[in-house]
Image 1 (cartoon, rainbow, N blue to C red):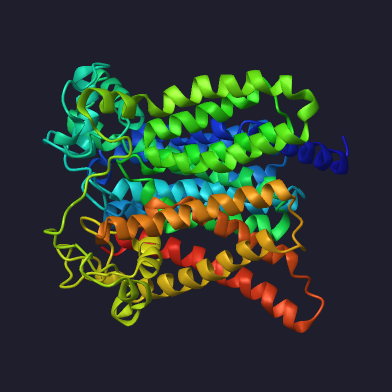
Image 2 (cartoon, rainbow, N blue to C red):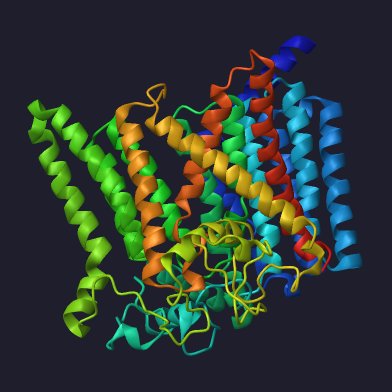
Length: 573
């Protein structure tokens, strides 16, 4: 075989390899995440030489598998470089960890290896939009893993409490661990967070049971539960990518949109969260993908996927209902458009209702019947809380800016600040960058972010504003390449989440309600808007060229600053 034929064969093998992964992206991502489960037992305090050797061996094994599957080994130079770079990066990671005790060195060698893979793809003419997005998603997974390793079950959590405690999400997980499928025989309002639907907590309890049966110490097993939100956050990248493809994002616009989701601080933080926010977000994003799949091909099987994703989303957290109205619009549109074949859709809609409604609402209906718990019950902290904002005027909360921007970090009495933030929009930007909670990210708990934090905040705010305005423009503009169904669906989804967020902020007037975690899908819609804006600008004039590459540059800077800060938290502690 000639050298040219060998190169062609190698390229075809690589393309076949990537096509196999892209056909099953959810499974591929889950396998990659679960592969690191033994490495995550107990988080950073339990990272040992053995676990680092496991990690190093895993990386080298993945390199070997890639070599075999793509026949890269046929090229001696590439093969030596591949193993050489991997070995040096892994050995450096192990050495630096023992010198600094910093798990940030998990991310750095991974980034080096992924960059080299990119080089190999480039010289084999396989570095296209799909493979580049694959590398970005892999880098996002490793950054999430780094965060999970240095984040304890008590760090930056929301209403989690403690394991072996008496309330909170952790205790709720332990309820299902200790009681199996036995439903609570008491008013769920009497224990904090028990009002939530139980799906997320049940899944966590199953993993906790499995780990303890396998002999893992209970404390380590509890910490290792982060592998599930880590996996959910990683799967959000895949679902977001699929949404971007629905609106025909491609090229640099698709790469930037995917990068924003891969490196966005909110998704990094959610990867280490023990509560049900990230799984709810994942089901919402999957519901969007499933709904458009049914729109393209309205079959019985496809509507089952829609019903399950919405139903399980609401069985995870009731706020997943917000994706239901846009989905209902798709159902109605297709039904009216194809009214001549209405008999085809009646059984589908009935099946949807039979699956979705009981799955979504059985918990709320049961609690209503047995204990008179309102269907939409949410506990109120009351006016006695030190984070209460209800005594402030609506005008002040909406338009008061200066006091909220005297620091870029979240101001929260009881969390190291003498005053509270009160502007929902500013808080949206702040929590998107740093979140809040125990050991929250600020220049008091982490002095090393005093310089990088403000850069990340302001760059992130600029990206969010530009991306949101771009999204709204393309949804309402007649020049949009999206069809009417796509535009109405995403407009409805955006305003339902945005209005719900503001309503929640004023109905439950506390600092903790002004958090991006209540409207995470808006980040995906914003990333979509930025991608569409970048692709729409034709650099045929100097002004347009500057505009296009300014959007690309500010987005890349945002991703870079996120990587720096979220490794810096541990790297320079």
